[in-house]
Length: 534
Image (tube, rainbow, N blue to C red):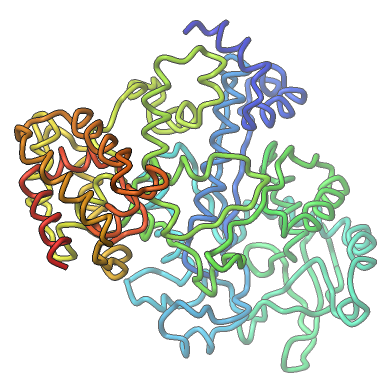
């Protein structure tokens, strides 16, 4: 693929990352003046454990970043993952240990609260920031991590803070009309940190000297305090803080969830007051749990990153996240198997597609993150994850990887973890998924009279086949049995469902020809015998 062909295809691609990139390209058709990198930012609040909702923002922003680079012929870019760890802890998360420790430190900056996990980290925020960074590194993201506490404490935000102080009244004029009367009484763009308690205070603040950074306020004990707002002795209200960050860092692109729509409007107005420009961006829909409720870091009701990786792969997670970000997605363990198989189907197709189709293929965008030269395009998985799960399901909750590989030898050439590393990873995840979600639900029923006759016919057919009979030949025989009028199936679907429920213990299943070839003909005949005895 030539760079010209890619550029031309990118200009008209309907894939959402390119639609977003074109908005940014209108601002900087050939990159920023002077060769300065275009800055993409993602934000993260470390008040709870990182979840997939956090990860998706970095991934989706990277999709847009790579699309912009393709669109502009390689204009320089940067991605900053920003942690708002100067925020005060408002409530104790449900899914974090040492609740009493956190309760005693409520309203202090997250970066100044001891680590409740007792893992040796400097603070609660440092623990959660480390977890996020470890996963981003594991996936291979190209990013720069920036912590709010470092920027405030080091004085790197001081110039921008002075600009906020200079325009304190103008910011109040923007924010006060959006607040309830009670909130207006205490609202201030600046949140001083109490010199007595270390808490972030929600109190009225008087700007004494904007150039010096001095403010005056009444502390929790009733004393009037005059101190600097610089160098980590204050932070800003959320919407003001967001705008200040855009201004200080020169952010050009940032997407955010629809729950922050109003914040985006107000922060956009504030950044203009400060002398900056609101970034381009996308408002995305939120992830929902299996009950249709919004995923919350404090509740811990969504899948964690590690949970997905216990049952699926990094690539399948990225694939599931890719489609239309303006549509809500359910995020629970039940979506993982199909995401894995769909990912591999799209990956196999990629190498044979024309460039315009490639740009609409989620795997093109994913490999742009993890494999920039896209050497993995066209790779195949010798066994689908769904089929693997069916095999493990028959073997039972106590099945081992060695057992699975012994059966894979019936179906896969050179069946070994060393020869098939991607499959080896999925064997481990299939064992975990079966143990936790499949095995507890399996219940093999007895066959009905007509199903019994059909199963006997299948057993007789298998008895005539060689052990290495191809899956397609087996599948053809399975079809022919289901079509025979004497067995009384209204449709082939009923025949397959009968096999799934009596042989596998599930309402759904694989292509039986593939399963029998994988599991083995003698072993399948044993399953039939068990069902008939039932």
